[in-house]
Image (cartoon, rainbow, N blue to C red; front, top):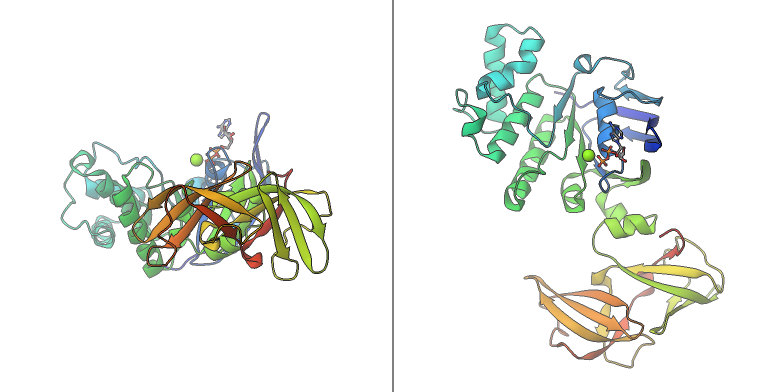
Length: 364
Ligand SMILES: Nc1ncnc2c1ncn2[C@@H]1O[C@H](COP(=O)(O)OP(=O)(O)O)[C@@H](O)[C@H]1O
Ligand SMILES: [Mg+2]
């Protein structure tokens, strides 16, 4: 099996007054695992349905390999699909369910049974041929759905929140299984999810969707370390935001007043500026919990009060309240010193210049 390249060119889809998909353009490499990530209603399913052929775009073009499939019927696109609801036929055995796409394609009986056996082996469900879907657990049913989607060896697999109905533990196990399967087969996957952790775990690249448009596309680390907008910063991983006013911005330093809480002075040269604000501009600073350091009270221009200490196995999270009311999440490795801090302690807040992202405030 070989993965197909996919090229989505300026796709638009409108339902009445809702622009469900807005000028989305994405190029996907053969064998790539691409996730569409975004909140509910951001257009992920609509985009996937257009690739599958169950929805027609108002404008734009869809290429799979060197084939323009924009107006090709769904059953002639050679694309596998797995939905959140497994959509197995309840009255058909597992073997018949998996053979269904092959029957549609008029495979011989002999080829069908060999392909079904292979597909069952792929998802580690050998011996389940004669059972009915109702005799399988949710996770097993979803594996059957995956086997059915892969049985005709499509070069492209579309998955729409396929693990949404499973509990957390099984979901995490299935994430690894699906990823391993995708890698060993070398197929291209477009995977829809609203769960950022799932997207980070599984994807080569993530396309973040917002209100129908593509907000940013990049590898998990690119999106985590260099989010292009406050929306992406907020959606991927845990992020602290501090709103403030630019007091000074010159070649050497950049100083921001955080309401009544104090000021943050950053070294102009060493931190990534998403925007380059002028004096008086309202800005939104963003910093990851693991990039903040708690230091002795009074040693910084920004101080706070430890409101809670949360132990989560490998790390401590401190909730620190600033004078102006803002709440910061600060994460430290459990083994590190400084974990002797308790609720009620006063602390200084040290944030390295290169850990701060600066966004304009009005976009948020
Ligand atoms: N068949 C439809 N008719 C009318 N509106 C729709 C239809 N399908 C989707 N929408 C609207 O399009 C937007 C995007 O929906 P959808 O693609 O399902 O988002 P997501 O999968 O990200 O949750 C939503 O505002 C939704 O209400
Ligand atoms: Mg959806």
